[in-house]
Image (cartoon, rainbow, N blue to C red; front, side):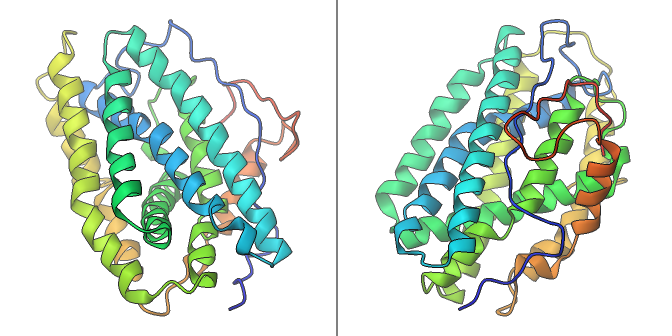
Length: 290
């Protein structure tokens, strides 16, 4: 089965980044809102162990891939995900210094992914990765398509999320294409997305709730109402995912049927002051979010 071509101008290529995630970043770095800050902190807590699992599940099949384009994409996917892990650990370390047990979440999530490794075949693990990559691609699409979602975030933290969104978009088909090439079937692919959706969201919100419960800072009594509206009302960061989420259940689905390459180009245009893709691309954190 041939790999579906990416849109013209899109490539999977790691960018080496630097963000000023120092101790002057406020505890409630997202609009001064505890609920929203800890939602994004909870997402960040999931990435290091999650992305290690994604890399392992895709790299397992690399020796069996004879398509040089797909092999190159696997390597750059791994480099991108590895750098995401590094940057989110820096953010998580900052949140830990602010008094929250991010390392304990990391350890718990390592246990979850090790359980998956022990109980599912390599091809099923790859199906898990393709499904979660669909989630991260959808989240990234929303952040790029609706830049107002990051308005009010601390300017040292917001660029990390827009950059991560771009690279999740660029490599959104890699795990899917490897799964297809390895003979993965539709029932497993669709079934594992259905199986992990509720646990994935549950883990995310449980970590968020724990962070909120441990937060001693004074905060507005309206924080949660504002945050819930942001996620599920208007603008509805999570609510807006539903149409693209359901597309995954089509037997003929491919991630690049959702062609959002123009969003990548817009982000690149807004951030021209660093060199795209090269090992020396080291922007500072003040660059404009997409």
